[in-house]
Amino acid sequence: MSKARGLADLGNVYDDGALSNRNLIINGAMQVAQRGTSATTFSYGTVDRFKPTEGDTSSLAITQTQDTNAPSGFSNSLKITVTTAETMSGEKNLAVFHAMEAQNLQQLGYGTSEAQSITVSFWVKSSVTGAYCLSLYENDDNRNIGATYTINSANTWEYKTITFPPDTVGVIDNNNGTGLETYFFLSVGPDRKTTNNTSWATWSAARFGYGQVADVAGTTNATWQITGVQLEVGDTATPFEHRSYGQELALCQRYYQMMADTRSGSTRGSLIGTSFKYATSTFTFAHLPVEMRSIPTLVKGFSGSTALRVLMAGATANFSALAIDPDTTTTMVRLNSTSSTVSSAPNGSGGWMRINGDESYVALDAEL
Image (cartoon, rainbow, N blue to C red):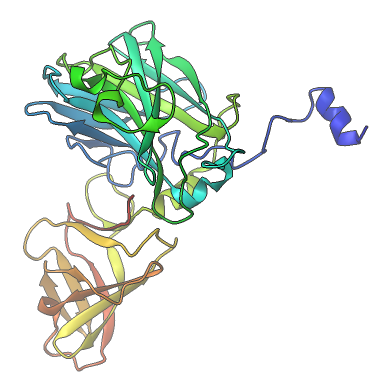
């Protein structure tokens, strides 16, 4: 017997799978919230990589927050609060969504005889008790599976684990597209839960939310919170893999990067990048700290028509028009503004671009 094996048998060495990189979920402890800590949108608005979504609703409204209320061992959670309730008829639904990049899931072996089981574990809390559906969607082959968990006590943190059998039919492509999507349903209309989904099969709307009974969307001020989300290979839930904030931020920045932010509470600063003048345009460059999943799109929110400022050759210009340039790559962004030309600066002049004032931001988006 090896010394390591002997120590493991004595319980002194963790011997239940990989020591690190077990968790295929990014930001499962809800630490990173680049966009802000509160929003009222059905989209990425607070906690990175976790997105509230709705289907076919008309009046439903929510607030999503990065909340400091969390179970022992965690500092944050994602909290959904219903601000305008709606009856879940037809195919209406409310869920929290997380997408995983396909090339990060090749160890699952889906589509082969060696496909692996996966286990999802998480902490959850809600003002509404009852059965909830967790549904997985395999994007490349349009397949899904679901399972239920039960919240037993209102407004109490509860730990849940769900093991899903392997899919020996559907294949997850080895690329930078979507591999698996997870849907934590909060409410599901009757037409979304008429067909059993407890084994892998072709997706249909009728099987997507099977087993959901609890209805968070139907009650104003109802709440649902989650943290400590882990998805790992195997049929056993292991202790949550805590990563440092820096590690988690870098993983999130592959999909979204805040370049500059002067909104209240932000610590990211106003400098966007270095600039130079060419003909009638000013180009601004920034080398990205993390390579993005794909060539990003520009996301911006400006307060006022002079929200940006360029300084070069001793002169300044204030403006708000900004666009991403076709020469942008996954590692370097080039921004272009024809309205930011400093007329007194000769071609080739260098300088910088920053946000001019408060309550504005510039970001890059390469989300799945």
